[in-house]
Length: 138
Image 1 (cartoon, rainbow, N blue to C red):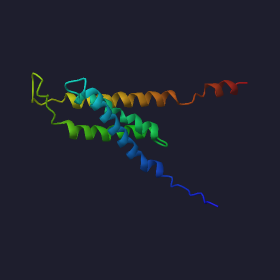
Image 2: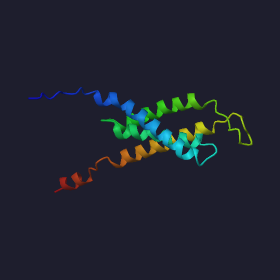
Image 3: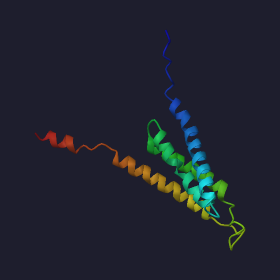
Image 4: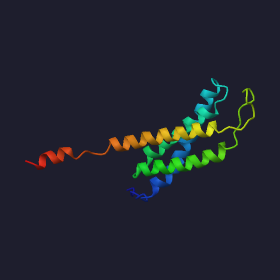
């Protein structure tokens, strides 16, 4: 007879960074392949799509989903700053090799849009107490 093994309560939280990382890499790679064949400079667009990995943290967190999304956004914003702070325009651009913050701002805006979507979903999914209040008066 096989014994049932109990999992540690923190096990889902230990997997969360891996899930977010895989979501980030997959969204970044797929968008780089798709957008790289269409756009001359896919870096800003890829950053926007990859920043949507904040939603992965929200959807995969076992509890405290909004806090997980906020922490994921903060970590992602710090990583985006480190990776994109020295970005320059591509060589086929009129301002080739000049420093720009466009990819950083576009990536951060993707994270903000994803975080706002998580906040709206969390706000809309809170159960309403109005039905309980109507029955108390009777």
